[in-house]
Length: 408
Image (cartoon, rainbow, N blue to C red; front, side):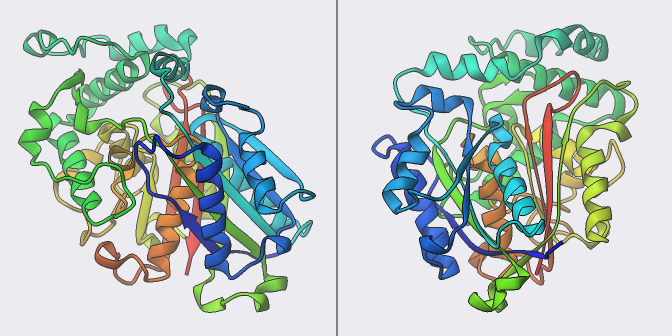
């Protein structure tokens, strides 16, 4: 087995890029990663292209990315598409890592792009709602029994419904009931991420908010308000990976080692058995593979479809005891300058849902920190970084997750 290194990363800005096609975004991210690596497209032996259900909203949905790559010159290179919803880009990275680690190839490109705005918004919400396993509703109701919103909050009807966000809100209420997590603590996560966004020129939403402003914002599903939730977005990200056998062809000083890359699927469990959560299990395997522990990690990018989700992932990654994720955020431990900065990019609450690109955008952010190239948002002395990305909901947890540890 070969050691695997990230030698090039590229990312477009994220946002409502109505004038840019998915082909444009794919080409831009791939070209940026190749330039960053100092690598010609002819050196790439296989491309892993992240796909998602939202490609179905585009013209030529099954070949949009492939068409873009062919126009770059990748006509005779194997192009493998990974359709795995929000974890699609992480899956592409995982497969790229496996290809190089096994010795089958030496240089791989992983790329993912998301294009959302095309006059079919109703379809977008249908796809979001399809991410929730309807067969698990009974289990969710049992878990959240007795944790309904306060009477006053039930009167703040947002006027629209999303099954996915309703499920996330129900999980948040159950966590509040069991562990004492507060609305203020969830709002502290959103405040922190929006503050981080100001320092990231590529993110979609760049503005600061006070905790009180987050709490009083438009309600989505109690306790979640709009600034606590990720919005839809567009953009692309890419990475070039190589084996130790060809490292002499790249700038070793800027190479980042992939210390671990683990993917896992969710399953049934007792709600009280939080240690069997799919993300906690995947994180444990990643730590073991890398030979490190949670206390060794300097910076993290985690899946935060909502601010509450970041609280849960901080617990799953072992940065605190289960139930203490809200307190961690409230004390500023997860902010830039804190002991373990989480989502210095601004997270999904700032970048938005760029389905098909999120996992590689996380890699871009962490590689930038490990190279000491993150500018005003740089995490000082970062040597070990972890990304955690998830997709969908199955029962009481994510349907799939991927945890990657990167090392300077």
